[in-house]
Length: 475
Ligand code: ADP
Ligand code: MG
Image: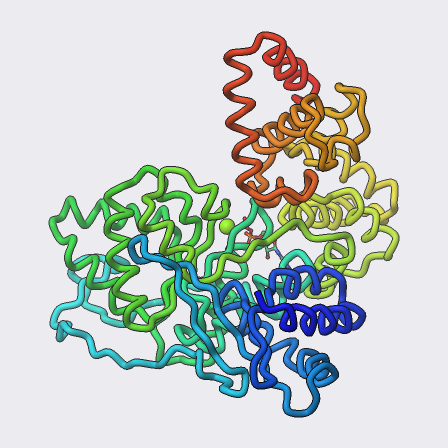
């Protein structure tokens, strides 16, 4: 690598770092590599098209200031996009785009006419016999962007959703895969994108469907011997939203038919939006060719909202319902219900209900009672922090030791056990487990899980660790 490109970039980075949020710096600037400096143009390598679009949209100004400081007014920036080559197993290739050439990356809007003249459209949503070609979008208008509050936990997914809604099929987020645990807003966000598209482009055919219903329709079509009609119906859709694709696990027939529909839509510049309770790397029993399609666009995670976001979600909900509630009570609820938004909403609804049925005033004590019941009744997920604490206590070390970079055997083992239990007891993705347990990558976590599996079947002492810890961790 060119030393000068490096040093120019390092100087740019230190300027940028001082001027933006640390989290944003980590996310958007640390992964960049400077690769070349020639003719006063600095080439930087970014991991994906999405990355490039995001930088251009949000950070082009600061990049320009930083670079001009280093290279003067004639400075230029060239992006080199590192792409995952998903066709076959050839070498990865790179693509260069000068930053002055804004918009050059936008995929072209090819208007592909339907091959089939679409004489008799069989719509699986319609009772046979009744002819109706208009496709109802099955969207819930109550799920909008407006009432999907933004926070650190969902910023990427929400903004990618907005981008898709303003140019369906015209961004590199195709498919857009939204993933995250239960009750974190996947279904809401998926609807919001569809609703917004319908609003902006009323002529587009948008369809929302759960993967479960899709599977059912497919099975029916096979029974009734009209599989082709089923496929054809889905191929004429402009924006296809499939909720909870993890449901397709192990259903190879449905996966196969979805693969064909997906390819057709994608090739014709149609937008596909998917949601899943797991990241693509963690999905099991989904065919590789389908998984690799899922990774073509953007996978955006919805995480548990932080305290501030929980408070604003509650306030927004109360405001929309026309209910007033003292701040200390809202904060009490937000402080104690952390796992997901559905529970948060549930608790506040019971609180409102309780107080109005029993004509009780809403007090912090009443909030306590209800929150307690709520927390007890819902199966709580152990947190990764808790697992790390239990494992390090068991081995009599600090959490920081457990997370440290050391290769000492007993520490490595403790760390691997923490990773193994995090995988077992939480819904966190391998990547997110790795980042929380000493900033490791997903491959390290996967390796840890395999090692623990192996050792507990070959090593008696080790099996004892696993058993003891399992007991401590099961609530
Ligand atoms: P999932 O599909 O991930 O299980 P849902 O989309 O059903 O979750 O969301 C659960 C509930 O939480 C819904 O009532 C939804 O409106 C609400 N919700 C989730 N995230 C947000 C948010 N960021 N702002 C407002 N409401 C939210
Ligand atoms: Mg859902």
